[in-house]
Length: 177
Image 1 (cartoon, rainbow, N blue to C red):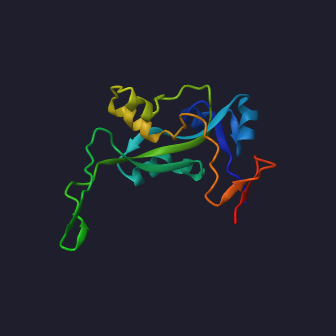
Image 2 (image 1 turned 90 degrees about the vertical axis):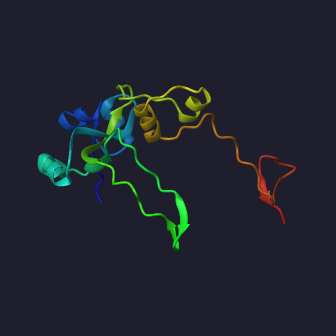
């Protein structure tokens, strides 16, 4: 099995047009960029109403495995959520709203240079909630897409109910009978 060579670039547009190089793993991307890199997937290019229109516009570009078409909900729409209701033997009521309008975008997976500017740098959701920050909808959307980060380093795991520490070596945990 061959590895996928992802482009190394400062942003998605540069990854499509003129990447610094290609690398399969972070170690290779570090060698190409000469500085820290982060693996990311970002949208680029215009939005299309149908998948066929997007596929026709991008054509042979979609042959690369690091470029994919994805369907996204257009911003500014209210998406209704179903409420559970037990009626007529059904757990969920039938959807009442029409499906939200969507568009097709080209998503590019690449090694982004870590010092390059990010489109929106957002605070952590729990910190923003505690500080009662006023957030616009675009920031909330970006916060939902970012990976979870710990507030503090993880504490060592506790020992289990049927485990004990050896008196002569308290750093060793053994099963208790």
